Length: 189
Image (cartoon, rainbow, N blue to C red; front, side, top):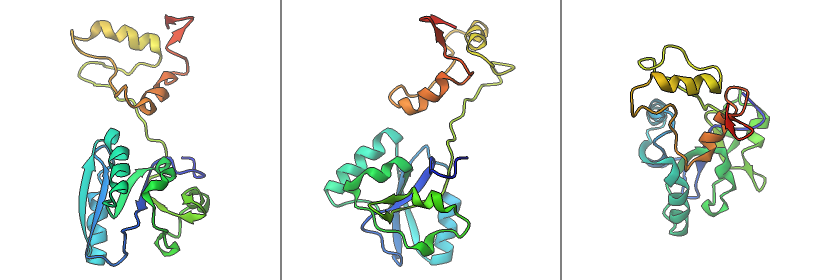
């Protein structure tokens, strides 16, 4: 894990946030980790109820920007760290008292916008993984050539790899997943 940057999910507080509200709306993607236990602990400790709004990851940024223009943002959002640059959201500053004392200071410094901390790190690291289905493949491929060869043992209509081609962030790390590009001299490796 690279502790100098928050590559995972962060909590951003919008300008509507008040620390002592009776209810807070938190928006995040359906793909985000299950945060229910964290929200339940928060509600138990503070008496503040959490209302959850979820969207697909491809829709969250657009929805937030539209809501910012209409002044209808949720109280907090759980997003990747690169959302900090969306100045239209008008984030609230984070009081230092909300930081966990063990949080790396360089991680907190990376969550500043215009000199103010605007996010709380809740997950750090780049957690992209490649799964294989043991009902179809006995052992995971260790190189692209092996992955391509596995196609012959699959039933017709079964795909080797699936991801959203609209989200290049998810695709690019797998180009070098086996330490070599999948194409060499424009031919399958």
